[in-house]
Image 1 (cartoon, chains in turn blue, brown):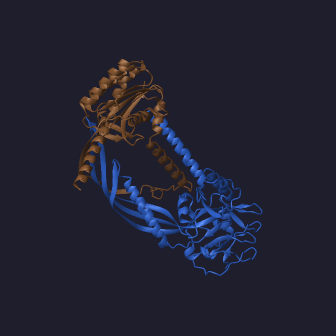
Image 2 (cartoon, chains in turn cyan, blue):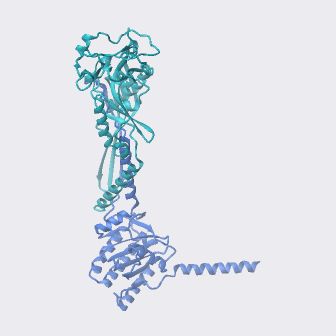
Image 3 (cartoon, each protein chain N blue to C red):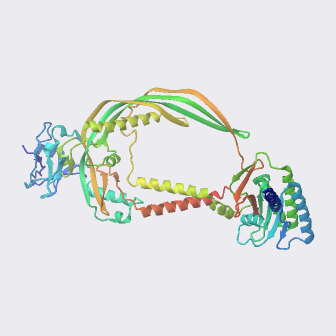
Length: 342
Length: 274
């Protein structure tokens, strides 16, 4: 049995890659495109539920060269012949994803979206904005744990309603105090938690949300033409992150039902999560690395929605100019406007 | 030994008497008309009225008419003129000065000592308003008489109830828009407000340069799955407090705005255009 997998063009036998704009598979040599069922009829091999033994090294199916891949890389390209290659063992057994959101954007679109985004950043240095070459753009299927759960929450606290009025020479302030209790429950579906240690948790979180309408059963075919990682954050570890999020969600949700008060402070709260279910999914992101003054600046572009987040360098001079201009404008408004009322 | 002590005691008494009289010995010329707007007899009449005010109320009263304030503002010139020309009765240099500044066509009343407490902001405003008309029409003698009448009237009624001192801008009557702008530019809190706005705006833009979190507590909630099982709002208690409203304008205010002059002495006062 082969340990690596390449999808080959039924017409010319060159490697096939997933092409996001048409959501089909495209051959870069003969330009033929194939739909998912056409591909299925040719090849039946798929990710297996059985654990496959890990090997020390993998060889490219096309040219036989050894693949350069660290231990979490699951889909990559042969550095010699550039053929997209999938390491099947890394999608098997406990590493077999349940679902995938296929890429919607191609590399060039991601690059353009990034450029437009960075140009709007007021504090990004001009040299950085005008950089023609972006050092590295990589389409990656990132491993995520998607959690479903039910949350039962309770909050209790003191709310006040303040009324003021004037009578004669006095201003009266009346404060009514209430004990407010709220108990409620909600179901949360597919709260995503980054399952790769390589990718920055904060930026992955900021790149959310993904549109789950496009989620589909996992198939290795989607990996062809992209990089993919397998998870190295275990479910239990991810679960604690998800629990904090879900607890905040239900708490905020309950708080939003406390209306008609001047203030509300929570004194006591309790959240219970149950029916927690994790499923393993591959979600599409573009990882963009741009060097500036010797430092790598990482940007994440949501491969489905095109949302950009990242480590924008900040120009101190621009910050200072901005602060000065705002100060001047605020000062003029205060002085010129204020003079009308004093 | 005993003789030495008694000599020292004598010197001590002498010095204290001398310094005491020096402190209370004030400049006898209280009407200074650099421009010759007042006749000799008018000056004599005003001086005699001032002398009686000084005696009755222990308030030095000075009138200065000039068109050269040495580049100082009316307020600073009035304060300095009073401080550096030996005016002021009692140990607190109590008294007041009306400056008629022909260069800027401004009138300024500067107060010191217990005059700060007697002549509150609202009283100063009234006094400035009362003389404005005469000054505009060139009736300087009338203006001086009105001023002295007001001094006697307010000194007689004493310190108003609820009077308090507060560091701050002196009242300014009939200020033009430009005057107000310039006055605001001299206040420190305007700079503080602008600085706060600037820092907050810069922080927001800096923070958003890395992208924003666009999910909230509803993003992953299954539609319609949220249900409240307990929903109670229990009334506990209530409190009602009342505070007296401090009115800034009108006759009710007892505020006397103060500032420090170049001599380091505290002044009150206010002024306006004519």
